[in-house]
Figure (tube, rainbow, N blue to C red):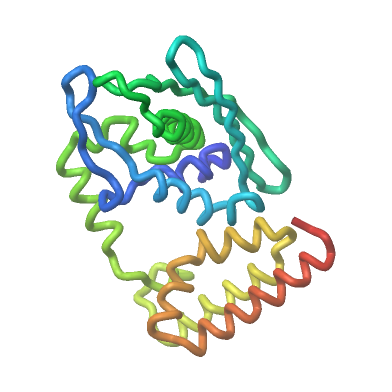
Length: 225
């Protein structure tokens, strides 16, 4: 049985190696860094567009030649949730003594990465799994796997099983009580099915997407987010 408290964590915990790189740290050891736009994409994929499904607030403080960025994150499930602030700091001066006009942005980006990690985003990186080359290779293979229509049982699927799976997706969308639940079905639970339909089954995708848009309009009209 899945632990519901870990649902968001497990959704965000695995990192696509294509959006990481290794870099030297101040203490000598090389570390894995994560593309900040990839992190924003992951938040958008799960919760929806920034400002609608999730939000962030940044407060800056300037003290003794340093800039502190304090980031607060909000995200919407059946209601709004908030945590933070999570802080990071950068020196306002470069090593040559010149002003670093990118310092506030660097502090904000680092604070957001730390804040996202509290939801479980890229937990595999922060737990040190990317130090294991075998794990990184496993992630490369996992993220490069072709999409498959999800199975409704353990047998090899055929056209009949695909039809059953598609009807199951439709029923789940029809039973969604909030826009968040509806969005999770398309962007998370049945994302593989939607992606595959776009590429190989345009008529199926059109049918699913029309139902999605109909349900989205209906829930918007009802004022249910």
